[in-house]
Image 1 (cartoon, rainbow, N blue to C red):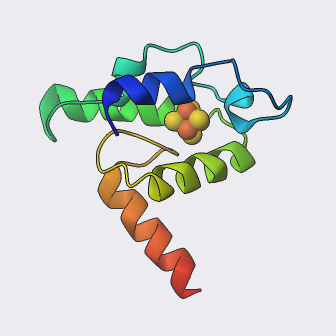
Image 2: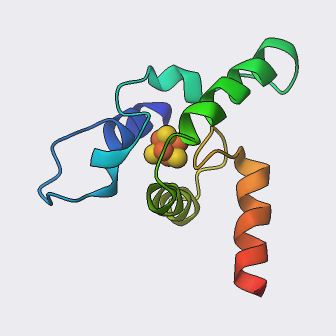
Length: 98
Ligand code: SF4
């Protein structure tokens, strides 16, 4: 999934259902670029932590929907559900094993 389509999915408000999880997302009004740190050191790490802090403001059920979305769409970078791709992979594997 491209960065552009991330913008169109997590930040859009044109969903027809009144209770779509995206309507409740804490990142709805944030700059989507925050969730796409480039690299894994220095400023990118700090950026990732800022993005994760936004995610922590999301209701838990929204974080869960967000995690499901990222895994189902096979998004292999960026911050979703308060996790980077590696963390999401581990979380999903642990959940599947439980
Ligand atoms: S968990 Fe993070 S990326 Fe997902 S909807 Fe919430 S703020 Fe956005």
